[in-house]
Amino acid sequence: MTNAPAASGSAYDMPTAAQVEQTATFALLVDNEPGVLHRVVGLFAARGYNIESLTVAETDHKAHTSRITVVTRGTRQVLDQIEAQLNKVVNVRRVHDVTRDPNGVERELALVKVRGSGADRVEALRIADIFRAKPVDTTLESFVFEISGAPSKIDKFLDLMRPLGLVELSRTGVLSIERGFEGM
Image 1 (cartoon, rainbow, N blue to C red):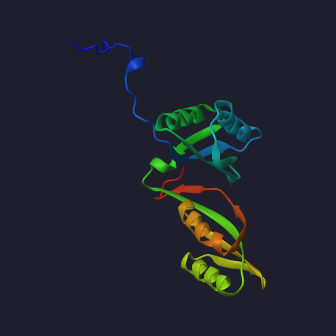
Image 2 (image 1 turned 90 degrees about the vertical axis):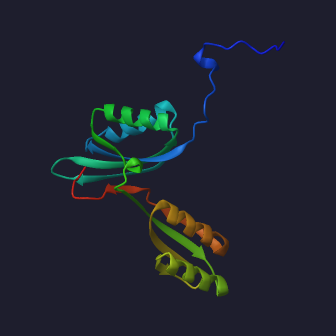
Image 3 (image 1 turned 60 degrees about the vertical axis):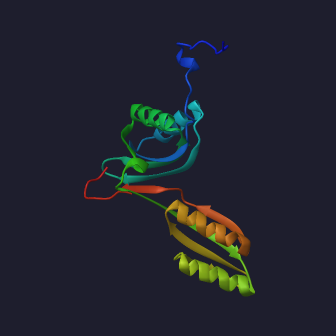
């Protein structure tokens, strides 16, 4: 005779698969009016969602529209909820999940200051050449490199520059656009 627990009919007792967090990039076309950015950012803050990257700029002066690109993390369920809530914000005209779009393109720009002399200086220039990073300022003790590309490319460049003397970093945040002839 076994003393196995009786099967429960409750949904709370059902095993759940571990939810995997992922990164998502949302492109928003919004009215270029005071308070719109505050409403979008407030949506994230009010629900405890973190914004990893945020870029905003006017895209059409005549139509009074701006584009907001937001990078965040969460489970698929949370990301779907964020997208649905963004679509409800009054001045948001369109929301596009760039990470789910096979035609989505994401790029970022970074300025990277590296201190170096001797062999480290030569190695920093060699790595910069491989990554197509352009030196935009140089002194006898340092370089400032400009690099653009996918965020993962910039991360790899930084990983290689750290041991050579990475001093300072400035990143623009992710920009995104969809391939093809149609606009947002």
